[in-house]
Image 1 (cartoon, rainbow, N blue to C red):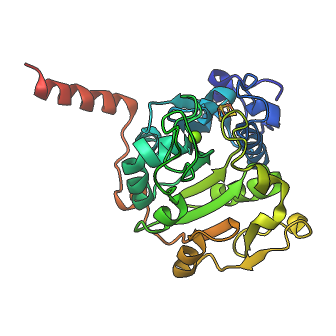
Image 2: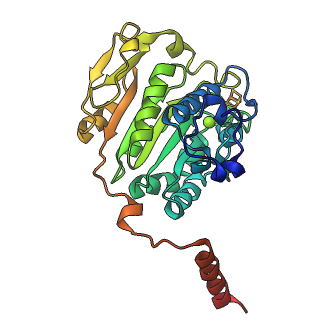
Image 3: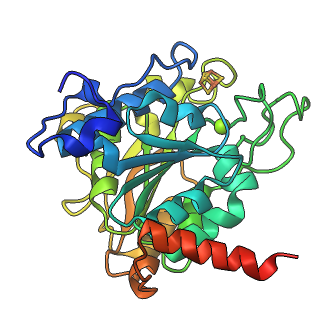
Length: 316
Ligand code: SF4
Ligand code: MG
């Protein structure tokens, strides 16, 4: 397909073939060198590889630099409000289980204002891919301290340095009952990023991926060294997890870890000398809310009727 007109798709035959360009929207307006560009490219490649139907794919975001994501894709999208991407996406998936739902959040969005939703989305384990693009700062609001800002790091809200130790979202996610997929990757390693997103997309359940993301505009120094020095990275590898042979020569530090082992995953998520990237935990047998709740299917007319009756109950 050379163009992708969503509203005409219902009439098109199902032997359509999609190229990456069929998912590409307008040119992204992130800063030059921003890690969000790599994530967008990786996601578009996944969609093309998977031949995802644009009219069956939805990207939901909150507020932040990375939350502009849905604007740059020719799929359905919902640019929501700060911290509320997860309840929105949960609603989308529960009412339309046939849709492929992705959520894109920043660190402030996911683990600060959206923290309550984050914890319960893990527990509900609704089938979707949730990406947390973590640049350790609020970028859109011009360098404000976020929960993952390193302690002592100067920002516009804490000019003498962040007072508190940075939150570890990996540990927190792995601590929530019913977590089913927890991974960490980095946007400057496209092969690893792609393999991680592929595994997350294939997962049945809530696939939560923390993507370490460079923000050259406000936090260029945070990931500067680790990008240049592979010695500061340890790959978490396993045949049932994420293994990228193309990276073997570059990364001598690798640790074998069976992603079904939750206790070991929690140990590996603790702060270490090196940043660990890979699949920490996966368990597809965890109950998914959309399955256990058995939501009845309603047609659009039935839903309108239902809403009208509810409004009627509260009418004065
Ligand atoms: Fe990216 Fe940072 Fe620029 Fe935002 S401020 S677009 S995160 S480089
Ligand atoms: Mg951020």
